[in-house]
Image 1 (tube, rainbow, N blue to C red):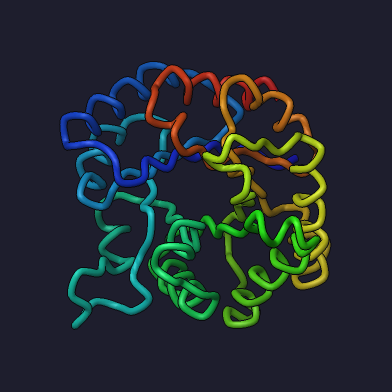
Image 2: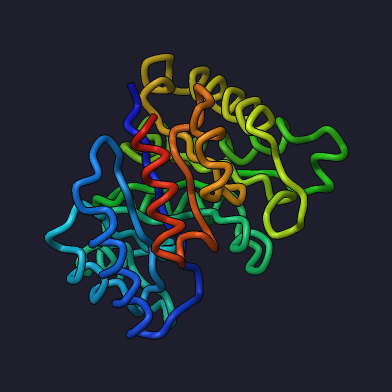
Length: 253
């Protein structure tokens, strides 16, 4: 059985007081919850403080990106070993917003993954299709190209103990929704692609998160799907009660 993972992506939100208040509220609400892993991913500038606040809790900390190169002349970037040193254990890579706004492609994302793995971080590799791709019946082709474009460059090392997050970009903040059955269809396809590349046992062990606007009111139905192993939560992760409700749904199984 794959252990559910609920990861909160705080994106570019919150000043230091906000980050500390949210971390403290989550620590209090999630204390004692068993059977799942939970991660919060604050902006880089809050990583060390949030990691310190959560040090004695069961909540792990992740970053929202890392550099594609080691420490050195990369002004404005943050190296993976710096992120690990700040207390992070996970890092989100290839998020749809990074692809859309900053033009990140599979070669760059793979280089970031390689740095993350070398620093002992667990990548959360994001894949997913736009509305244009979905309406052109290119969901599977798009997702497969994203997965294999990274794995081709990582080689036998693969993603290590990382996870994949499926983001149906067309269903995020658009008013459109993906049904639990639609999510399962793509998650099952992703697991099949992993089986072809990594073998059945590795594919069965890898967690695949749903990143399409999971909320307290749809979490239970999504998490009931056989290949949905958790969620990458955006807006709902900024509200302690909402994030805690999603975590509770995951714990109920």
